[in-house]
Image 1 (cartoon, helix red, strand yellow):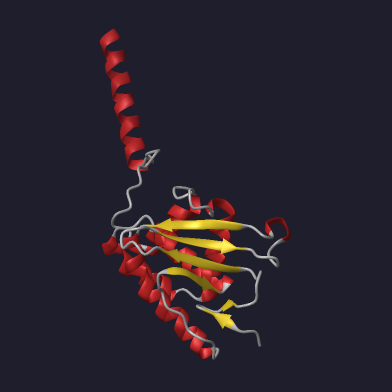
Image 2 (image 1 turned 90 degrees about the horizontal axis):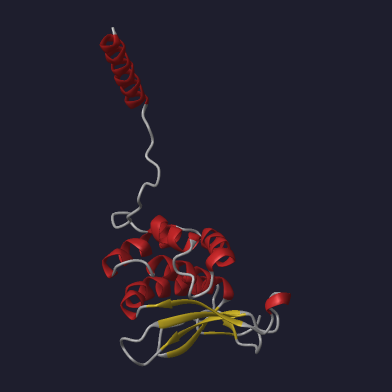
Amino acid sequence: MSQTVDFGAPSDFGMHHFYVEIPAGPREAIRIYEDYGFDGDESRRETTECRVILARELWTKIRDDSRRDFNGRLKAKKENTGSWTTGKIKLDRFLGRELSVLAWAAEHASPDECPIICQKWLALRPEERWWFYAKTASEAGESNQTHRGWRKALYCALSDGTSIRLEQKVKPRSKKRESEDDDAMALSLFDAIQGDL
């Protein structure tokens, strides 16, 4: 069995993993990176991509729930546990995907919405989180793609929905409204015909 560091990341050099950069400054944003290493996908081998830049006040609202969830699962596998400390913290690539999903949902939230987002994220099975990661990363997985498709959808899915403002682009017409319009048009035609008589 290979040794791990931090949150289940392989200690061997060049392995595919994620890492979180936590600056010393208490107000500086945190960054989550995916490092493909030497054993990553053929097209992305030896590349690193920043998945999300998260405001520090939002990070402080989600970090404890993610730490408890990850450490509980690492303990069950009899692996060392991790903590969020200043610097570069490595994660197993699957845990990194899960953390990215949580951070993507939180990036559009207010600090007050983060506990609800964490609750809903905790209710998801790891496989569901991985599915959300795959869908989001394929369409909007870079740090500068915050307002695209699945990135916004994660916020909508994991928040309570009270702050979501969507404008209805096309108003549906109801049957009742259509029949009222038809009656009004018939009456105006009837009035026009009577006026001609």
